[in-house]
Image (tube, rainbow, N blue to C red; front, side):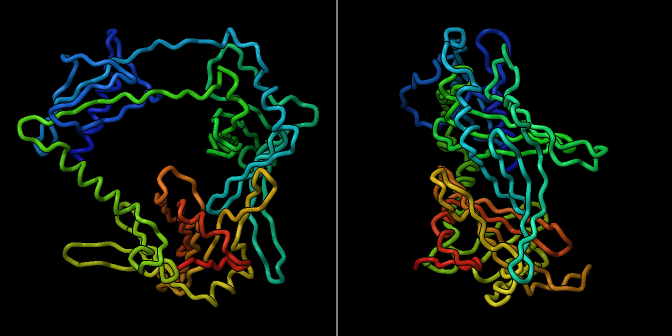
Length: 409
């Protein structure tokens, strides 16, 4: 499989670097798609032109040979920024800053709050006995009253509009200097001001990317729909229509993308993921396992946690089992549900049973059955398992105050 990927990436590199003017062109803004047609096919004229002598011969690790026709890329782009006389970026974003709108991103431990034109906050909520909620929070940046949320970038052709926020909570790692954040607003016509990414680029200095449709009227930030450039690879010398390794990869992907929650049986409710030595298996309402498979010794299983309704309810009384985010109309919608799985195998380092918090998160995706799974170990033998999928979006609103779900049969 590794040899196939070297071949596959090599093909992409040739396609991207192929230049008809004598110098290499490298850009991740130019999308390519490899197609595997039969002997007879009609060349596409969308996104590129083709010449019969403009091809490469590629050979896989299994000695399969393909003749791949490469597109001739055009670099003609009309720059209409000079002709634009509409509102400035700051004026386009002004309604967002004036309406006291906030966007949220929920991670495994921290929740991030961007109140546009006001502040960026990082916080975590914990419940104590008696339903008292303790909040741990840091302001990553704030706007002073009367300051203009803008940064001079005239003359730069950038896909984002930056807004600087300083005056955050003091950072002990930087001699108590205040934290600061740059919020990068990026045009996306279908966005709803959601946070795409948030990162700590240097110590106590952060960068947030927010998608918004408000910038799209400005040509400097306008969303560009690039045509997909097809690379056509035809089998040679009795080779299969598509490489065997690629066909096997497609079958594995189809298996992985099956829905995690289903009433059709336990098999559809079990998800296995992981790279390296350990892999992990999540069976909804049953257990979380960590395991390693060896051809000689078989399967070594560690029980990370087992489901028990009473244990979970006891945990939910002291912790936040259900988190919300505000929709544009002001309504609350469940974004994350946390479930406690305890009574795992005893940990050699702590002498206590392992336990795991499973965080079920709604994640929009073009693929309705896509599933993202990750495992964290914030404390020794105490884990966080994140499961994100569009399928989960359908059931989160059924969660009660303890995070117990009603999954339809």
